Amino acid sequence: MLTSTQAIKVPGRQITEEQIRLFVKRRKTLPVDTAAAKAGFSARTGYRLQRGSRPPFASKLSRGSRRPDSLAGIFLEEVVPILRKTPELRPVAIFHERQRHHSQLKDGVCRTLERRISQWKAEHGSDRPVIFPQT
Image (cartoon, rainbow, N blue to C red; front, side):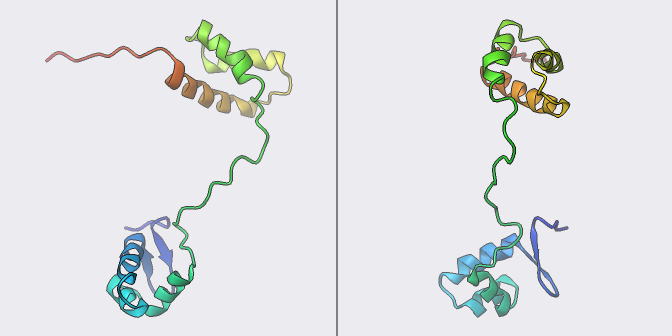
């Protein structure tokens, strides 16, 4: 079953990503109508694709962040030293402590801090013990 991220909606049928790849590959050596027929859709759709109409599942450029980083001056200067000193502290405890010192931190930033701490621990934290099960 196809999902909306794998198919483009056209009148009558849906065209899969695989069909478009096949069309692009065949289009290098064949005319548009022949390449479209071999890919399993109409010549009109082939001309549409050739014209540059981008299917919805085609990768889009990331737009980046729209709001300012509320942890910009806090994470590296205050949170990382705490993590180096006591890595077993939970991110929620660190957040509540930082919230006491910085009143501008809203509750919605807690999850962001948890993600950043998790990423930091994965990159800079202590190694996890390796266990080989005995059989």
